[in-house]
Every structure is written in C-alpha cells, then in structure tokens.
Length: 183
Ligand SMILES: NC(=O)c1ccc[n+]([C@@H]2O[C@H](COP(=O)([O-])OP(=O)(O)OC[C@H]3O[C@@H](n4cnc5c(N)ncnc54)[C@H](OP(=O)(O)O)[C@@H]3O)[C@@H](O)[C@H]2O)c1
Ligand SMILES: *[C@@H]1O[C@H](CO)[C@@H](O)[C@H](O)[C@H]1NC(C)=O
Image (cartoon, rainbow, N blue to C red; front, top):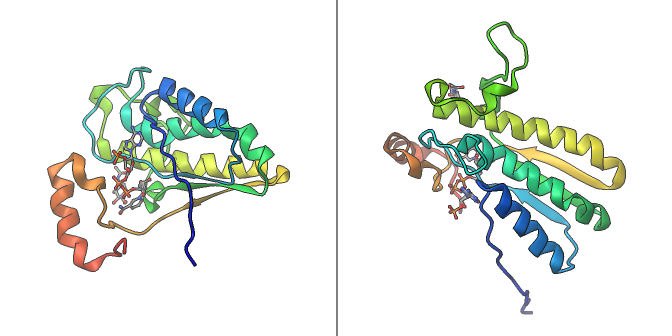
C-alpha cells in the first residue's frame, strides 16, 4: 500500500526571534494539530557573533530560539494532546556548569562577550540549557498531557555539524569509521 502525505516546509531562522515569531504565526495560521515538536537544530564551533537580537549565536540558535518557539506553540501543543516535545541535546552537557568562579549560577555566562567566548564551552552550555529546559517543560506541561524528553543522539556522528570549523571537519572525518552512522 502506498502512503501519501502532504508535506509543507516553512522557513525558520532560530538566530532571529522575529523569524521564530513569524514561523509560529504561519504555523498557527494553518490550524493544524501539533503532536510532535522536535528541537534538533544546532551550531557547533561558530566564531563569536551577535545575532540581530543582541545575543551570542550558539546560545540563541541551540537553546533560546527553541525555547521561544516552544513557548509560542505551547497552546497548540496543549490543544493537540497527546503531544510531545523532543529536545536533541548531547552528553556534552555533563562537562559544564552555568556558574561563576564562586559557584553561583550566573546567567550572564550564557551570552558571553567576545573576550570570554570559547565555542566548545558555549556549545556545551547550550546543551545543558536544552536539558534544563526539557526537564522543566515536562514538569510544567506533563500534567496537561504534553511531555518533553531530551535525547543524546550518539557521540561524534557524521552529520553536517562539523562544517563551521576545519578542526571539527578533520576530527569528525577521522573518527567516522568508529562512530554511529545516520543510516
Ligand atoms: N553529530 C553529533 O555527533 C551530535 C552529538 C551530540 C548531539 N548532537 C545534536 O544533534 C542535533 C542535530 O545535529 P547534527 O549533528 O545533525 O548537525 P547538522 O547536520 O549540522 O544539523 C543541524 C541542523 O541545524 C540547523 N540549523 C543551524 N542553524 C540554524 C538556524 N539559525 N535556524 C534554523 N536551523 C538551523 C541546520 O539547518 P541548515 O542545514 O538549513 O543550516 C541543520 O539542519 C543537534 O542538536 C546537535 O547538538 C549531535
Ligand atoms: C565539552 O564537551 C566535550 C564532550 O562532548 C568535552 O570533551 C569537552 O571537554 C567539553 N568542553 C568544555 C569547554 O566544556
């Protein structure tokens, strides 16, 4: 039997809160239910850059953009139960904290100035944000039938995530025979 599905693409730039907002409006305009929302996008190893919203790119794309998207679509998720959110995080979240040198949580670390930016650290912190977000979302929405889970897809899987820095292109190519493949 042949299955037929109508697939429609809408553009979304997570580095722009305005784009996230227009995506959410366009989606809501379709009056479709939303049963599964996968927050998968990420950048790794990008040079320090500030988005149009004045935030560091890795933080905004990997965490804040998804956070805003889910917030805007929360009512649709709640009207579509059973529904779920899946946040693609990483084991990398275990390697970091969002605390200052005295051990106090410091949210300024999430969108650092250029002199304090280290791409790998920013990525790891954004993946920790993914986990914290997913846990809290599940806590708040699961009583209403919307669940949220975070996943680690596998270590150094050959995707396009290495594209932003030559060092990662080399590293991912070297380990490719030993890691999980997409297929
Ligand atoms: N690969 C691994 O070993 C690994 C390990 C642990 C966790 N992960 C996680 O797995 C997830 C998927 O990564 P991947 O390895 O499949 O990397 P990928 O091939 O680079 O896929 C990342 C996706 O993010 C999208 N994206 C980047 N910037 C965006 C933006 N500003 N707005 C909207 N979308 C944007 C990209 O879209 P375009 O192609 O259109 O730019 C791309 O489709 C990520 O959350 C990553 O942290 C990967
Ligand atoms: C980031 O996470 C990786 C594991 O994916 C770890 O090897 C690395 O030391 C961490 N780096 C920082 C700066 O947190």
